[in-house]
Amino acid sequence: MESPKRDDDESHGEAAPAAAASGLQLLLHEMLLRARWEGEEPDLLPDEQLRSNDQLQQDEMLALEAIYGDNIGILSAKDGLQCFQVHVHWEIPDGISISAELSRGDNHDQNSRFFDTFSVQHLAPISLTCLMPPSYPSHRAPYFTLSSQWLDAVKVSSLCLMLDTIWTQHLGQEVIYGWVQWLQSSALSHLGFDDGILIQHPDSMMGPVNVRAVAEIASVESVAQWLISYNEEQCHESFLSGLHDCMICFTEYAASRKCFVLLFDVHIVVLPSHEYQAATTCYAVTVGDRSAMAVARQRIMAIQDGKQQPYVLLGMPGSLLCTVPRGGAEELRALWSPRMQAAQCRP
Image 1 (cartoon, rainbow, N blue to C red):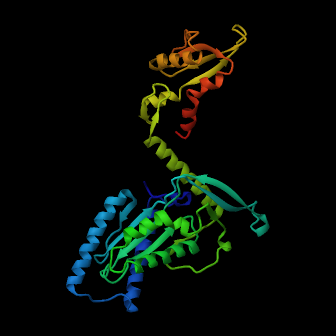
Image 2: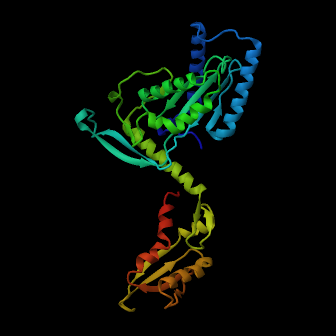
Image 3: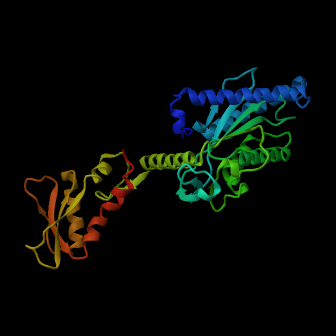
């Protein structure tokens, strides 16, 4: 899954994400140099310890790349140090509701604000960027930043402090996998978002901001719209990559298969029924391919209890004319419409 891009980033082209990553990498190197200047980062370690740390770092990187795949990106090495970024996707199997604090018109005072609530199945990830110093993992934790395009800096700072706590519980051990796992499974709960996410104007947020927290909410409105768009894009990708039961041939196919595309060409038209019995309604059912005709006949006859064969409409290939008992209209439509609705996100 690719990292998300905001609409306001698109004008900068493909260079914007690379420039942002480069800026974070520079910030991490500045942290390392500052720690050395202040004596927090050891300048010299025994060669044996350096070799051991280097091997542990290489093993950890291999494991992280195998686990997170496309969600991890290796940044260009500087001074031979490992630097990388992980896009951490939140675990929300049942989806989550989001309440965004919006303003009416251009008035941004407190009295004009209200909350708009919506639900998402996919939440834009948070990015963990790490630099492994030569002293990791024996003496120091990796230098890191946390970046979010929808969380405010105070909340991201709280997550940074929690990663520090996790390191103190695992001194001398590889910790990055533990960091990512905690962010995935426990960060939302840590922020108090068990029952839903609250996004407020920056002036509503008060608290200390950590230098490692990279977050800026330009406007709650733009963040809310971006989260909705991101969710729709991910739902669309999940739909196309998933398997679905075809309501025409009753076979499980991927959404891109022709048989499933055929489903979109089903049309049910109500025809005047004055020439037929008052207890029935006449329908024209059109399918996009003659190969589906036999199945369509069988399904229609099941609704009719086998009392009448559907007729093929002359001059209209792939079309059937049928009557069904009153009250059977919804049953007829139900043969196809649920999948048609599910497929409306297709371009």
